Image 1 (tube, rainbow, N blue to C red):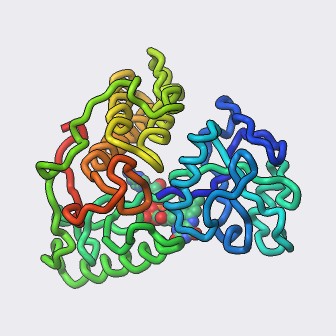
Image 2: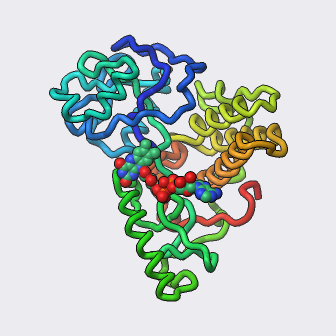
Image 3: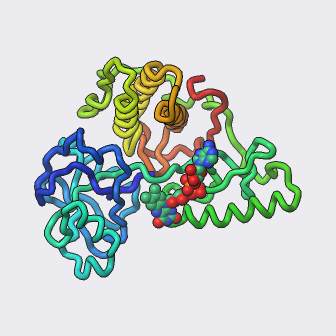
Length: 323
Ligand SMILES: Cc1cc2nc3c(=O)[nH]c(=O)nc-3n(C[C@H](O)[C@H](O)[C@H](O)COP(=O)(O)OP(=O)(O)OC[C@H]3O[C@@H](n4cnc5c(N)ncnc54)[C@H](O)[C@@H]3O)c2cc1C
């Protein structure tokens, strides 16, 4: 799931003017400050590079993120604006955000705030039954790592902490009651591998097929430099497997992930092990994204924009992501 209004690092402080942010900005790869959606609830406006409003600010996260990405591609910019200049008592209502903005030199009373969608929550993960039992006896999961089935097409804000509380307790109760594995409640109903007829998983493409404006993410120089490889991986996943994706973009991203895996070689230290973990997660995400040829929420398959009733299932992929 993508949060629509993460503060965009490296964007110039100049208000009301979209200039490209510096790719070498030191905070570019750091976690981004989230500008709470409560700001829009209190009247903050979304503005494009021309300063125009372009979407209902009270729409769900996925619709706003999609509208933003489409506008960013059209206007050739890597960020848009959150205009909170009309909010009164900003510092009293949002003291933490006000403090963080002040530290970056932005004044929400006069500056439009540079924003872009950011990966925020992993919807999906290890499939469990309603007590956190997985298909592997003895392995229990709850929290963000688990796919319990409680989130709909768009995880509602603050439901993840509730999920952790509720399912953590259920796991403990089930283990204490002597349960050894999952119950046949139907929650574990799944399909192993991509069903025949599901398109997309085997599509191959070259960098030339990447969506317009996204090919810069694919320039992977021959290097074993971990930060460079990590940055290439992040760029490819953000631009090609992010808010809006299609089969070709996913195939190109898969090629980048493969290249990073090969360039990485055998991990030697913490940073290379972390990168290998990122490569593994990225590969699994790409296999899943290629198989789900529909749009149900959170993100959008531009080549399959509507829901497919045949995919009202959980897809479970066995084996190595490359298989
Ligand atoms: C910026 C931000 C704001 C958010 N705001 C909200 C909000 O307002 N409301 C809300 O409900 N949710 C919010 N979320 C989501 C929510 O915080 C997370 O979904 C939730 O904290 C996940 O909890 P968890 O215990 O499942 O996982 P985590 O909190 O990620 O805990 C997993 C732990 O496992 C450890 N770990 C990982 N690998 C290993 C290993 N191999 N061995 C041992 N330990 C390991 C990690 O170090 C970590 O401590 C927000 C998330 C972010 C990033």
